[in-house]
Length: 171
Image (cartoon, rainbow, N blue to C red; front, top):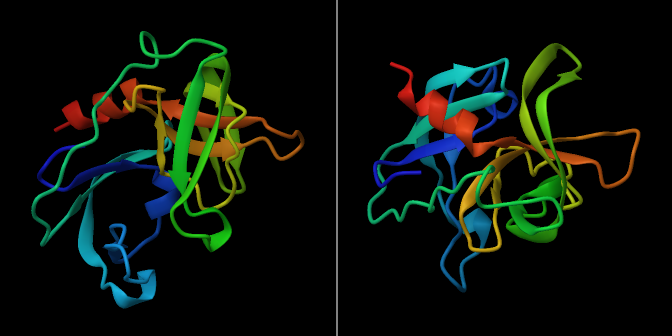
């Protein structure tokens, strides 16, 4: 989200980690396995909203993602786009549609409970997409892919970028 190496991701992605490694997409012709990770540290977390800010070290020439708004940049019916690593399939791209915007939505994982404003999408989100960006049609970050509703198909959720901006403001 900035040129200093700050990354917005999910709390459940980094929770319990003693060390963090971040990989950037390798240049054309190189495989993921041939690229070493960059070291990173957790800066701040918001467990309730399932968000975390981390900082990557040793990087240069980073280009921040344009920050959008889940309020003004997307509406129900708009296309959205996600990038992630579902089931370990690196750098997968998917697109879908905003199904709803859910205020103060509550969800739980096996050992944690959460509440935040979420964007509900029909964008395919699988294990491994968590913590990845949800983009508007114009390429702005509007959410952080977080969860799917296991009991239903195409019920996927992203925490709104506004919650991430709140996290950035924390000391």
